[in-house]
Image 1 (cartoon, rainbow, N blue to C red):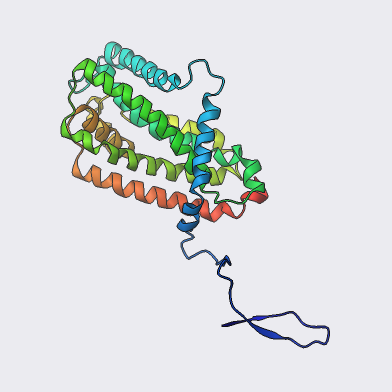
Image 2: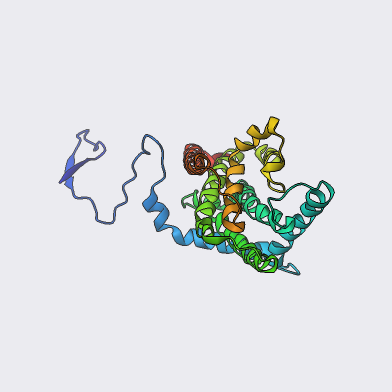
Amino acid sequence: MTTTPFPFTPTGIVRRVDAAPSPNAVVITPPGRLGLPRWSELWGAREVLYRFGQRDVLLRYRQTAVGVLWVVLQPLASAGIFSLVFGTVANLPSQGMPYFVFSYAGMLAWNLFNNVVGRSAPSLVTNQALVSKVFFPRLLVPLSTAMSVMLDFGVALVLGVVLLFVYGVNPGWAVLLLPVWVVLLVCCALGIGLAAASIQVKYRDVGYALPWVMQLVLYGSPVAFSIDAVPHQVRWAFEANPMTWFLEAFRWSFLGLPAPTLWQVGGMVVVSALVLLGGVLVFQKNERLFADVI
């Protein structure tokens, strides 16, 4: 049995009575030392996550002439342009693969990363009416954007499988590891997106700077060309880029090209975990200010 204090009575005497906590009572406790979210609370609100993701898909393709075909047209057009510029004009190597399917595999990985970051970063500002008036775990808003991105990725991946049959490419057993690279890449992108979303609530400059930064990352990553085409003087800079590790892993599993080195595989796991953890911590630290400044 516990005792709960009552306010002063008119006579100035403090009374204490024994009170048993209600079985349906919700106990609000301060955040822990790391400020991690309450996972049970997130799990209990999983229906909200699903509804947010469903709404994102419906709003994005409502009143469009070709609908979900945009998901297919964008990587096809990008792969075609990259094949023309880098494969035909510049005549860069593609590790023995047809340049179109080689660049398409790179666009699969890049679009997955870029879309998760690009859609999760402005998600809180876009849903500011809900964030400021309705209580729910705010972490679910940027997380829900990954659901719609994964749907887009699945459609583009099916087209990629069709291209493998058309060009006669057999990736081998390494294709079984493709879901591992997808999960790691999404975790890394979500970590960046969570941090950017929480900062953009207060500083809208993030909405202008982030697309520019992502464009720089695109130019500094071997998305449309092989790492073998990079001169040895600057190759170290490309190999130190974590995005290069993911691209090499994607092409290994999707096209059967040489596997990334062991240190790159370990680096993907470590970087994804650290970036996701850092993004969650930044988000949780700024969450208490969302309703006041959004």
